Amino acid sequence: MGSSYARLPTRVTAIMDRAIHKAAAGFLVLFFIASGCSAADTEIVTSSPAPLASVLLGEDGLGDVLLGFPPAAVIAEISALFGEPDLDSEWIVSEPNLYGSCPGVKMRAIGWGSLVTIFVNDGTDPLGERFYTYTYGYDYPENEGGVDPRGLALSTEAGLGLGESVADLEDAYGSNVVISGDAALDVWSFTITGSPLQGLLTGPDPGDTVTLIELSPGCG
Image (cartoon, rainbow, N blue to C red):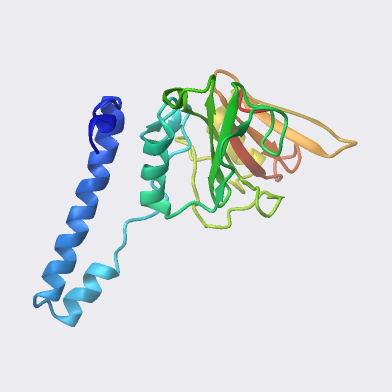
């Protein structure tokens, strides 16, 4: 990767190194299968894939992929888990648009189903490009909310995911949950005191469900 790899933060290079090691391990498995493993052995190896839902919806990023990381590191790590993204807005001017009003001079949205990562840049230098926030539960290409088309089944550390009830939300975060909305417009949201996590709901009642999870302030 040359000198550009050496300039990345230590945690970023660690993530990249893990991806390289995983690829090497995959090559060795294929080598041993090709060099004489039985059909039964092959079935054992291929029938136990690593679960995709191994990324937490964190308060400071997505699992080990932290806010502030450069786009290349974030995209590489998430693509290693979920494959190629379905959405790439490319770099566009940070002004009110489909993704909201993001800070900085320009922004970029990269999405895997309804998991969308948002990157911003305060200037024009590519070194200023950084992971700013994420949103989970809205499929921008299909313009549809409350969905998980890839079946990622992601959740927060407390176990909150899409489709969980308001009762589950309050069980997970207790009295820190604040629900607000407009009954006339039938628009409902939640925030969590002391946490940047927030989201949308189908309603305020215990049986209503979570349709979006994101980080505040985001691109509101």
